[in-house]
Image (cartoon, rainbow, N blue to C red):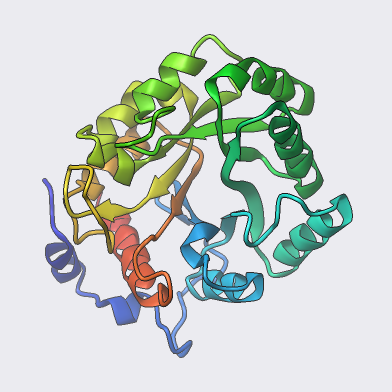
Length: 278
């Protein structure tokens, strides 16, 4: 059964303020808990694109999320190996796991090489990236050389390279199995596809998920707090559980760039509530 946001909160008998707080006066019962059910929550730091790395760390901690993938404004691609390591060490010292980085665009061979060196120095498990089609063979060689996964991100309507998860899979299915997908469920819905069906169909290559919601299944669809839009979030999370998904469910909250924490906290609380119900 599909429940909307208000119905889930009523069933759970909770409020967003009780689930997570912006004042810091309440905490989760188990502050070390990193999983809800058998899914691991994460943050795509593009959410905090208008904030410093220090603020990004602090807000991620306040949400009790332990896994993060950094965007280049928080760990610049052009950084030296020493600078990259220092940022990675700062993340670790804050009690967080730097599992990935992205979205990283790769339009030249030099940018492919740069991305994998960057990932190596940061100790990443996965690059969330968008390599040009003609560079996939080179990316394949780099995955084999560095043993770092590459999760290609779909961007929906207007994306000439990888509009949908199906487009990504078609291009990578014959490549090394460490090249797969980061399914952005918002962009997938905007192109008129069901994110849950895409996750199940391409489960063997699903390495990362960008969690969000949108108000329309159309190119002009805009981001909303998770649970307020049209995406069947309970159905999607149930599918991830069904296929035994072991990557991160990373919130990429694109609304309210200058003040994202309240809407993001609501989104995180909603997803945690859903996972208690399914």
